[in-house]
Picture 1: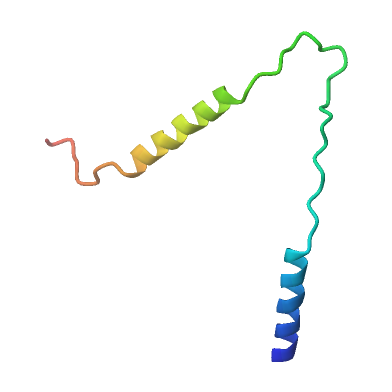
Picture 2 (picture 1 turned 135 degrees about the vertical axis):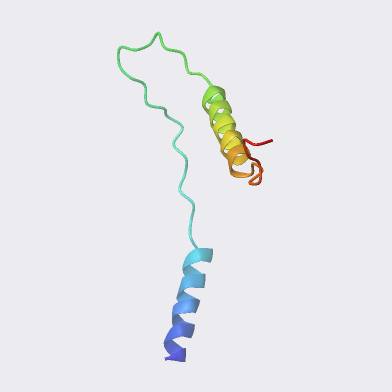
Length: 70
């Protein structure tokens, strides 16, 4: 049993360390007939995502002892 676990661990380590990364494709897909749309950065999406995360954290860490009787 231990021999199999050691062999599996060795195979897993060899598999993870000897992998060759795939080459990145430099060509981008262009939608035919939609040449008027500009490519833009993902700043709007990241900004909205950050705002949602901040709002969720503020709600999650609000004071649990507050009440409407203050």
